[in-house]
Image (cartoon, rainbow, N blue to C red; front, side):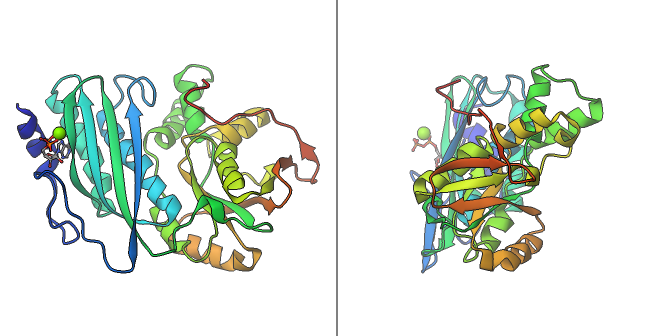
Amino acid sequence: MSEFELIQHYFTARQSPVDAVPLGIGDDCALITVKSGMQLAISTDMLVEGRHFFSGANAQMLGHKSLAVNLSDLAAMGAEPRAFTLALALPAVQGAWLSDFSAGLFELASRHHCQLIGGDTTRGPLNICITVFGEIPQGQALRRDAAIAGDDIWVSGTLGDAKLALTSLLSQVSLSDSDRNQAALRLHMPVPRIALGQALRGIAHAAIDVSDGLIGDLGHILKKSGLGATLWCDALPFGDVLRNQSETMQYEFALAGGDDYELCFTASKANRAAVLAAAQQADTAVTRIGLMESEPGLRYVDAHKMPLEFSLQAFDHFQS
Ligand code: ADP
Ligand code: MG
């Protein structure tokens, strides 16, 4: 199969045309029509074999996750997905792998009406790089620099089960089969909080998606907004499987685990009811976990408001 037959068979043929994309795969560039008054939100994420996923990883789940982690960035800005490009390095053309990968990819893409509009395909160590394009009304993006002292800090869903699944895959913790499978879904099949991100436009101030661990990602909001925060550790929404593990593990994985793909966002106290209504509209649970403060630094307190000490670090590709 030639490079062009591969693109046609596994990627072009699997979707039908949409109005917002007058020219998709097959020319030198794709064309996207942006409605007036809207801005494009653009983000890229790369998944490298042996770094972001184990070699031999399930291809369908990999197709899902490659797009999901990108859509999660759109969610964190409050953007609506429109289109994406796919740059793919493959060691060889394996039909079964490509079928499964594109099935996982397009299942998620079609759910969010996100059109594949181009990419690049080359031979090389397995590497998947996706760029997503989303739309957002001018000036309404949920930026990291927009938090205000006194804002509540919220997080969607639950934290830490993805890290627990990874730890179990590395045989560093032992889980029952059903716990392992449940946690593995959080690691391999993250759900981008697209509906919540859009519902929070005009309600939240700052937002970020939790990909490298809550404290690291919240740290970006603190830094960009020039603020500090206190986290109420007893309020953290631990993952369903993590909830049965030791307290040390719960704190570590929820605060610094990574791969959660939940949204962490700030909103004024006056908007508490509006946040809960947005969460309900998006059918996504949200939990209030702390407070933005003008004093720099991140502080942790327990249920009695007594300070807790952690020496935790967010994930960093060049420091681990
Ligand atoms: P160019 O020579 O301009 O780089 P290519 O020959 O690499 O173009 O690709 C031909 C067309 O197929 C282009 O429209 C490109 O965007 C698209 N394409 C290539 N690889 C992929 C892919 N993995 N998924 C979707 N579209 C792709
Ligand atoms: Mg090319």
